[in-house]
Image 1 (cartoon, helix red, strand yellow):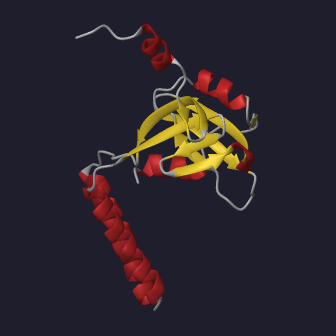
Image 2 (cartoon, helix red, strand yellow; image 1 turned 180 degrees about the vertical axis):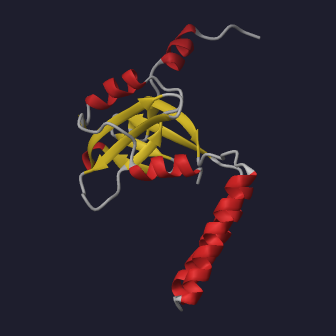
Length: 175
């Protein structure tokens, strides 16, 4: 085998160009966290679901009963699935999360909550106040390096001190 051309080696270490500009950071995370749940978790969640269903039947609230059944079925199905992998890319033009691309112009602010090992998240707020904040696990990325990259394009929200309510709720209840 011939030795690689030195010019090829230099270009392979150069920052990658993507359709959204120069790649600044990239990592992967699991689509969802697959918690190890105890028998007590399954028993207590079943009691809550059955109790909610019984209450909805007694109060003749058919819609609530249907919603409880659908949620129980969805959690049963999800519990049997393996999480897929989502790729996050930060480029000169914006942030890609999986198949979705968000330009820097559509984003307003970011903040990092880094309290390992439990909480390691990047939050991004959209210009449109109607869209929910984007919550991205940062996994093993260097939060200082991510912050330095994002500060070039977005304002940092220094008032945010903890993870979002929904992220904390999901983590604590292992949903």
